Length: 90
Image 1 (tube, one colour):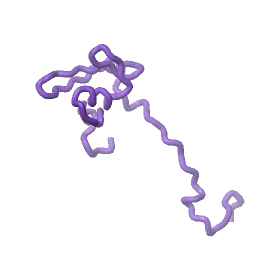
Image 2 (cartoon, rainbow, N blue to C red):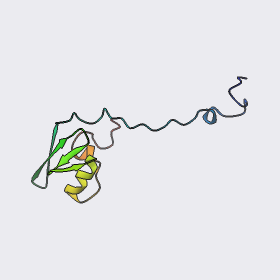
Image 3 (spheres, rainbow, N blue to C red):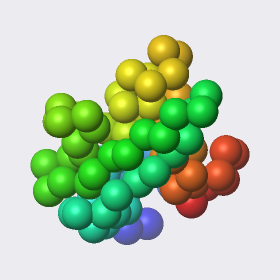
Image 4 (cartoon, one colour):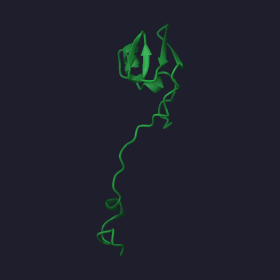
């Protein structure tokens, strides 16, 4: 038995401490990129900024907030703007 582990009867899951959830910052498109989306016959353009996103001259922290502003309902912003397909893990 190893000194770091309390007993052989303790499952390995209890020995492993949970990791802190990290948010990947490298997923966001490069600042200056323009995202275009047509919705109900209207073209919507979003600009990626260093701080987040800009839509109609207003700053936003997430694409989901912009998608909600456009549609009036909750959307995954990455799916709405075609950066990720629905149901994919990438």
